[in-house]
Image: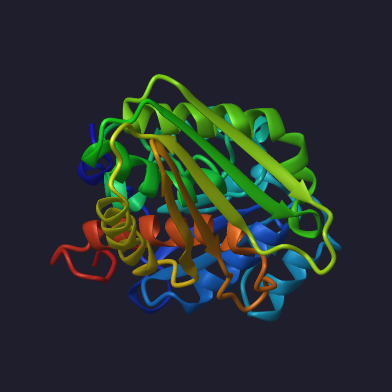
Length: 309
């Protein structure tokens, strides 16, 4: 059964919006709270963490939203189910959350590299999975690189793909560092899946540079007979589509030398709580909000932007 065919059974939140919850109170969770706060169709019914004194719970409370330090138990104990749950914890934790919520009518939007949900990259797949209720957003590097890698593989015969992402150490939190192996494996799996290129590699660099380095991802490709003008046209078209939901996404280099192609993109965060260099968090969160908002539109009887009556 596809996500669009499922009825969540949850009631509409404030102002006709659908009920959502955020689990995780790190930088990703805080930015998700802010983005939900600005959304015309999402209502934050609960922000959840495990540390009562966390900055994430304090941020949600300042905006007037219910909070709990009860972790996943608080989600399970809610009087009414949620339409959407954003999971901004860790890959291992998401596996447990999925198990515990298996019988709940909730769309899980997974921002961890757990690799158990239906992989979604908005400009490649649209915003919903074809099966199940668990949507995987892969990784920040995946969201930045796969639109370019997929477009190149669709237009040209690609022999090799390598994606190299660089994030600032000051924004790479505990969960990111715990998930390094999963991050690399999940990103490489997604690149292979969405390009049909057998020979791929994914690399993540955590930069200690001062001032912090803005999030950047480079796509290296081997394309026999590559034409520089044709490559640039493909890349520019893809970047424009990504900017429709992540406006800080910019192509900063596109070079062709023989059969070697290098495309470098930089993402600047446009956020109430993130520093500009944290584009890695901004792009994956922007994709998550887009998934949830279009899910809300599908729940609307009129197919518009409101929630179910």
